[in-house]
Length: 196
Image (cartoon, rainbow, N blue to C red):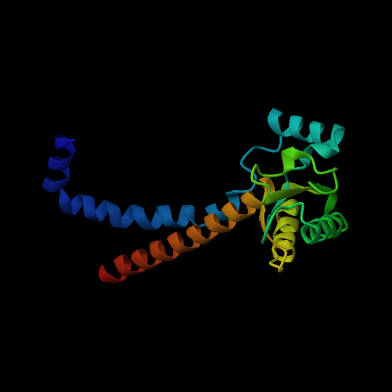
């Protein structure tokens, strides 16, 4: 490392000149990169894992129950209170009837199974399986999240689940990428204009 530092210091003008030549070339090469990158589909379409996942989804359509999940919190008392049971059941039915949802069930519609209720009985889950490709499910999850994140006198909801989390991570990654590109563009423009 010390040798490298000495080399750079001794030949600083050559290093600076090489940087000014190479940086615009690398920027031109990298300009098309965002279109080729995909946060939503990290595995190759022909990969064995992708084919296996498609086969499982075809054979067991109910296996995607964690695609979209609503965490329902009772405002007062437990999720077994009459008002919460009514609203939770209605919420499940509305979700099941939504476009892009292949099935939906909940603590209330499955006979109040303990696995879908928190230990303190203040929260319960509504789970849904979504149709389509990964990208289509992400779009569906976005629409469902807006529509089903509610707050009423009896309960409040929060959206989560595999596809919903992927959607949130994707949105954040795209925002961060845009910020990074803007910073890089500004620095590149400043660097180019200072050497004219």
